[in-house]
Image 1 (cartoon, rainbow, N blue to C red):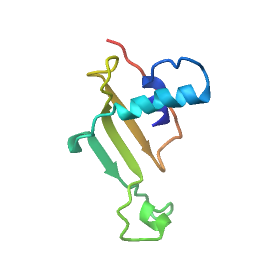
Image 2: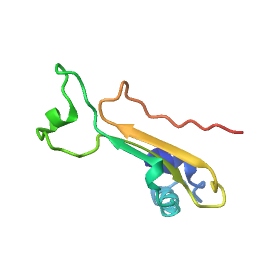
Image 3: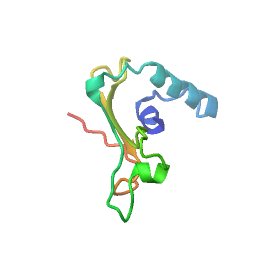
Length: 104
C-alpha cells in the first residue's frame, strides 16, 4: 500500500512528513471498493521438507491468507480508468518491491 500511495499521490506542497502523509491519505480515500472478481487470496503450500503455511502457523484448519493479489482503481482526475495491480505474500520465489509503470 505504501508503494501504491507513493506512485499515485500528487506532489506534496512541501516535502515534509505531514504533507506527504496527507497526499498518501488522499489516495487511500480515493480507492474504489475492490470487486470480488478482482481479488485473489491464498495460502502457500510446500513439500514436506519446507512445510506449508498451516504447518508454520501450527493450525491445520487455518484459513488465513498468506498471498493476496488485487486490481484497484483510484478515483481521482489523474488516475481515473487506470488499473493498479498489487501483489504481496509470504514464501514467494524472491523478495522484491517494484513499481512498474507502463505508458500507452
